[in-house]
Amino acid sequence: MLDKNQSKVVLPAWVWEGVKNEKEAKLRAVKYITPDRYPGYKIIKIQGDIAVCERESV
Image (tube, rainbow, N blue to C red; front, side):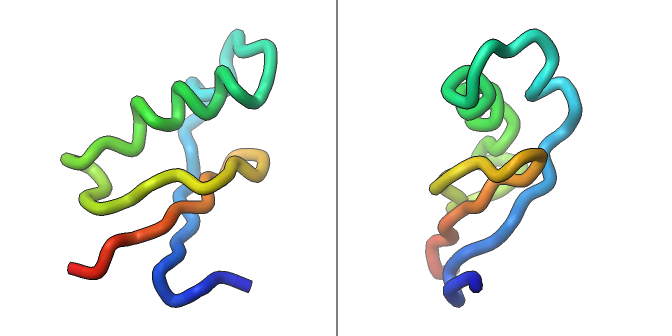
């Protein structure tokens, strides 16, 4: 179950294209979840095509 300050973000397919492990996928996910797109979001973990993120209170 998610905490109040957690959100799930669906990652695009290009995050997984050509990656060898989850660490590389997380690096690409960081490039996708930018402050312009998702202000205040920080990735906690990757679960398949979804990034579980922590949100700062706005």
